[in-house]
Length: 305
Image (cartoon, rainbow, N blue to C red):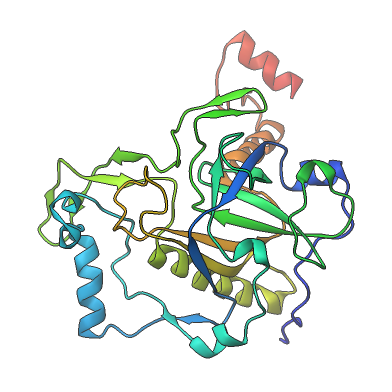
């Protein structure tokens, strides 16, 4: 079957109601920080052969980051036991220039943190959706959309920082990269590391590039079926080491995975509640909580559904 030609990944003319339906309504603020960005369009990444030096790099990640210093010995990052994607430099060089606003890493910030604040939309805990003018690439305020926009999802731009958005208090201190304990089994020694910690709120170079590679592969597999993936890879932003005095473990490379997106649809926020709503309609006796019950309340809820 023939695949569809590549089309502009932009939304049609949108009004404010459309933005709320497709992308959400919780406002966040973004600020550019020190670092850089590199295009990672479809075709710019491919699987890499498991050469000895590549395997050694993966093994080093699985064992922690003590090679960066004693204080990093119990710091771990997400890592599948597989070679990192290989960057196709020709595809990167041929990619369209990134919009100016995406050429530096973007980080969630509290109101008043910086003079250069860009409004965006909440997307899960560590991500945000930025709306760009389809022609100029300039940021568009989500509260004032009236025209054609391109939605860009930034995954790893920090958790929600101390302050308020829409009157709601948020818990993470700036820069939204909390260090949290984790359960970690050293896959090389099969022993648990009781002191293991991880940095939350961000992506990492190898995780961002693997996501870009797999997103492109999913989209390519769908196009012969006249379907398209909800996200397509665009770039990887890299925070400069020590970009902020409060950055945890500054020698640990941190990134943002940047993708164009057609909408905000998440497993916990949309898919599971949707399946629950469908179950209540299709399965007699399913209460509003999603559990079966034989109480009068359960029966009433099922009848009401």
